[in-house]
Amino acid sequence: MQYKFLIYISYSYAVPIGNPLEQEIKSRGFSVKWFSDLEDGKKALQTKNNILHSIKDVVNYEPHIVLVATNDVPDFISGLKAQVFHGFNAQKRPESKNEFSHFRIRGFFDLYCTQGPSTTKGFKAQQKKHPHFEVKETGWSKVDPLFPIVKKEKNNFPTIMIASTFSKRLSLAHNFDVLSTIKKLSRSGKYNFIMVLHPKLPVEIKEKWKSLNGNYFQYYDTTDLIPLFKKADIMFADTTSAIQEFLIQQKPVVTYLHTFDHKYLINIETPDAIENTFDEALSYPQNLLENIDTFINQLHPYFDGKSSKRVIDTCISFLHEDKSHLKNKPLNLIRKYKIRKRLGYFTLNSYNKPFTIKLTD
Image (cartoon, rainbow, N blue to C red; front, side, top):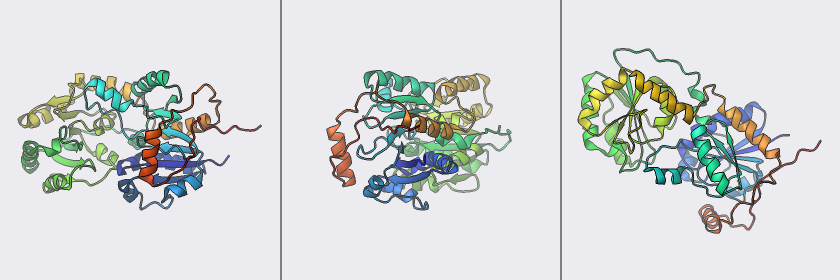
């Protein structure tokens, strides 16, 4: 059967999630199209030649499988709706709010392709309360290019990657004292800094950090983080979900005012602790590395770079499976109306039953 896939996104940071999936789909000779429901994502897709430019084009395409790297997806599009996630569980908030945010069930998906045991457990628990979807553990497509992981040799001029989230309350990028400290260290020649900032951060904040560019500091305006992960010896961050992606390499992360005091992170609370803590992290403490190993074995225990293959295999298999044990999706009238209003496409059509194509003998 010639399957038609749709990769559905909202923001530019979802493109590196979809790229390995697109590559896997094309390698099998199947059709794949992209669609973004927001302008930020549309701009990031401009270099591709397989974009659907309007929601009407998406409906007419009639995909068999929709791979979603954002929070919701129109119910009136055909196809199996598979959530492939736009990030790891970043654990930014107190536990009850954090769990609610990451494991929220919005009622649009037939399948959740989870990243590892910690995500699988959370969505399996939700499935018992809302039995209209299935949960299959596949690993996460975005980190496929990380593998195989090559151990970086230690040197006397280490590279430190800085990453920051967009929320003002949680973002180190908004902190003037942190900026001043990094500026001083970047002029010292002791470290080499590379930096990325969340696309949602204000332009004026980005410009302040860009102004540090020099021999030992380089700001990158990109959502393709994996090449930078590979260059870095350690990371300096706040609560950004990039932390979890970086940790998969078994490299230390220093966090600034993280919500939690995780054993797999070195957390600091004042800018004057930055330099000494960088040196501690660069020594790769054995107990820290052991805690990182324990964490990533629950987060993403797949080191073969084949998560995209597992996602596509799982989606195709589930497309044809008997789903009579699953309930209809909830009515979701308010959310459905909001999606139609946002996209400017009003229709009474709605795929409320899990999408299935029965194979004939």
